[in-house]
Amino acid sequence: MSAQTDIRPATLSSGLTPDRGERMKQLWHKSTPYWFMSPYIIIFGTFGIFPVFFMIYLSFHQWNPVAGLQSMRYVGLENYVLSLTDPMLWQTMWNTFLMALYSGIPQHLVALPMAYLLLLLGKRARHWLTTAYFLPYVTSTIAVSMIFFVMYSKESGIINLSLAWLANGSMTQWLFGWLNNLLPLGWVQENSLIRYSVSFVVFWKYVGFNIVIYTAGLATISDELFEAATIDGANAWQRFYHVALPLLRPFIFFAVTLTIIGNMNLFDEPYVLTRGLSQASTNGMTISNYLYRIAWEWLDMGSAAAISWILFVVIGVFTGLYFWFFGRRGLGGH
Image (cartoon, rainbow, N blue to C red):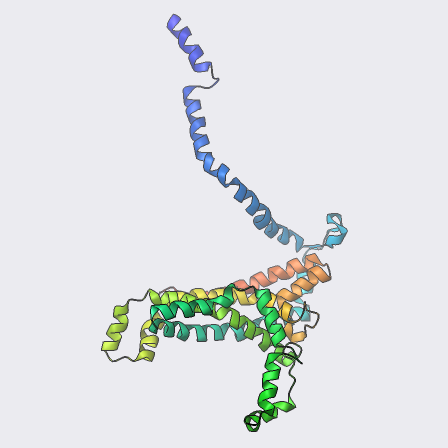
């Protein structure tokens, strides 16, 4: 009896049985990593997850942010109906699609052979040139766009000045004299040129990124395959077409997918080149620019949220179609 009275206080003195204390200790050890991760989870939830669900909620409401949250009014699908029946939305969607094509397709048509040429060079030259090609990608988009804005200037831009020099030069006038009838060209002012002007800036900035991707992909191909093709009599073009391209399919699929997503979200370049949309012509505004104007100039956050989800669906459709037609081959399937 005395032995039992001695054991009981020992087991209950802490208020926990040995089994329960062990479980609490194990629970604490298991939860410790989540405590360390909690700052990231809180920040990601606040600035990543919450805005997504708030945008869904907002797309069914009419809201002027200046008037405060109390001005939010439920309108159902009205924002989606108004957006889908807005001619300007489809015009900006068409502009975005054309700029994505004009800038996206040349990126890969240039990047693929350039990456292969870099492979044929020595390592030292390859590293220097790869760095040079990649430099525009890591340069600020705003800075790049501002430089091209100066170059595109109608009166004092280096492009128009160079064309004028060619048109009036004693040795070049016979070939370029007809340019005098067109100069000065409004590269970012005229509807007929602004898409090409913006697309060239996007091409120039991102072609180096694709060159790096394809160069990395070519580095994974065994030299023995190229040597075997050379022994069989294949020239440089045949080695590129029959050896390099088939083995680069996963890298091409990855790079083109990024191009589709990035170009359909095009905002910075047209915004800066048109000086904050103040000179944006009908053909110079992308859907992201139009969304910005609705949200921050017209303060119609509900319609802007609806357009953002429409854009999300469009990008998903384009990406899904690309994956459907090229996904298996791009990922190495048959």
